[in-house]
Amino acid sequence: MTEIIGVRFKKTGKIYYFSPAGIKAEEGTLVIVETARGIECGEVVMPNRNIEDSQITAPLKEIIRIVTPQDMKIIEQNRIKEKNAFKICEEKILAHKLNMSLVDVECTFDNNKLLFYFTAETRVDFRELVKDLASVFRTRIELRQIGVRDEAKILGGLGICGREFCCKGFLGEFQPVSIKMAKEQGLSLNPTKISGTCGRLMCCLKYEQDAYEFLQKNTPKVGAYVKTPDFRGYVEEVNLLTGKLKVKPEKSEDAAVIFSKDDVTIIRDGKIKIDKDELKALKELEDK
Image (cartoon, rainbow, N blue to C red):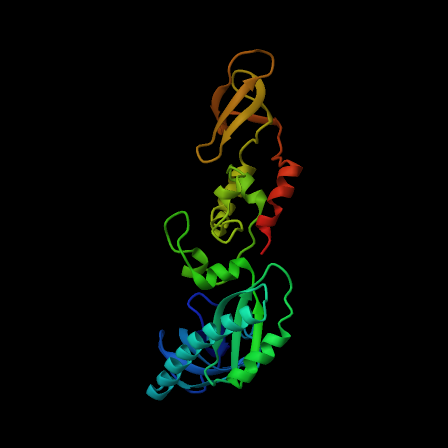
């Protein structure tokens, strides 16, 4: 077992483990730590605790100290520097006529590095921009191209549900979401209905997927050939949540009859089909 403190650098960012080095820190405490990017300020989200050695990557870096009033002044100065750097960088992007959109700027606690996050539809040659920014700020400059999902996570906003973006509010990491999930959940494959503001599939499709997969295993699919208490026929419609099936008799023109899934026996199950052309058109919604 190893004693650790869990620190997060962004509201919904990944949790990193550090060695307490004799420091006792409560949840919500700001601490100064050393990271691969340099000296950073983070928030304690996991107070001192012991965890299995298999859950950590040794060696752990140590907590340097709990934030002091002087540190808070530096943090405030860095926030001001980030805002100024954002304005200057936007001006430089226009001057260099680069096809890119600046999203965010971060300054490490020790002022050793400025990180500029941007989006672009294609690859951008920003070497001259980096030189220009370095001459202005006299520090290390790093430009990182991010995807539209990352942009939404940074900027935030309201989803079609009226609530804050999940990625901004509580999702630590993006989960893979696919068109297959939308089809299995019986949703319309209309891009405006299943995609978020970022233009990619909504993260919330993942939340109920396990439940739908379980129901799919225990429910005949559309097109299944089944035996009901009254006749044999084909499943025309399925309501996974209620377990109701609409079954069309195979040897008559009678209207389809509704049965509970528990009252039918599957002779030959159906398959969930997605039109290839439709899938091709929607494939870009799956990309990060």
